[in-house]
Image 1 (tube, rainbow, N blue to C red):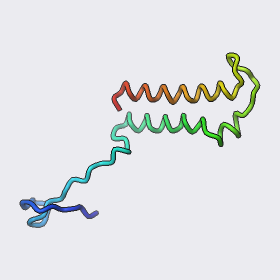
Image 2 (image 1 turned 180 degrees about the vertical axis):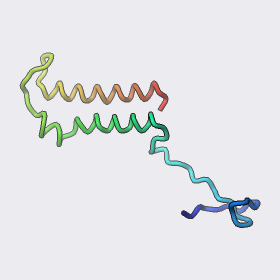
Image 3 (image 1 turned 135 degrees about the horizontal axis):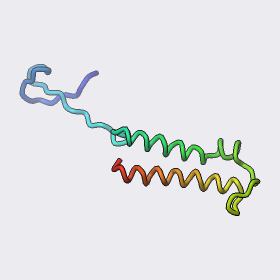
Image 4 (image 1 turned 30 degrees about the vertical axis):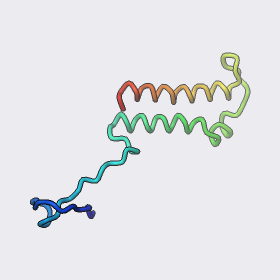
Length: 94
């Protein structure tokens, strides 16, 4: 892997006159285990509310749950799980 270099003093691991620059890490990738857990859990919760699963597996009215058709109760549950994951991540300072 090639690193960008800047002109500077000589270091033991660089050629004379060149110092390797630190490449900043992306802010789009989680940096901690809790960050990865929250990201994956949120993506799974949101994937369960998307059309391939909703239209193919849970697109039905019966049974009624708490006065709502099954589809609405399922979507409410999926979104509440996503919100719970975000609150959990906020509490962990992810």
